[in-house]
Image 1 (cartoon, rainbow, N blue to C red):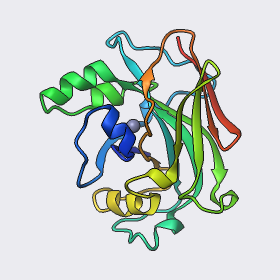
Image 2: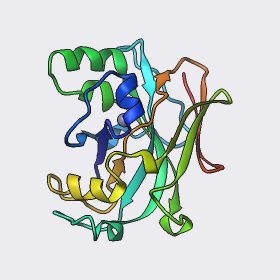
Image 3: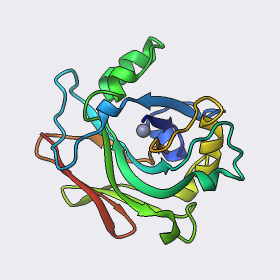
Image 4: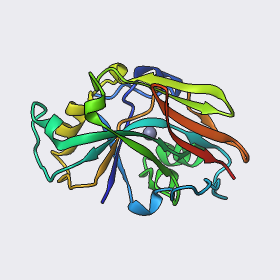
Length: 203
Ligand code: ZN
């Protein structure tokens, strides 16, 4: 399985990193080895002094598809979740400056947190879902899927032009504003509405 990640999908986050507004979604992959194992702490890697949390809504693909039209995209997932795209921001900035790929900053072991899944049918409208991240009990990121530049079905259409989607593939749909550094002993908890979907300790 693969993790397909979208960058720059919320205007306020583009502004906080002083990135340009994209004309197409920014897409990158993480390997399955980047998935943080259940109940394990996240260890800050020794090659970074500035690892950031990026809280993101996740989509789990439930059937094989390629060139999926956005009007059929809703048939390709029936679960949504919440996760973190951990990013070594210092390393990413150096790679970006040189125009190099981001993988070392985004795809390292443990860099993908995947919380519990919720059935899509629990939601009246997937384009109006509130989600938030608490760090040591303070809200640090808050978002709503209505603020995505590319909505879920448009993302499925877009990424399936390039990659065949397979059962179990996961799409990370991009982070809202509020990304920030994590430190040893921080505790991060992710919520959709009032439901806690993950809780992790930083080491
Ligand atoms: Zn991200």
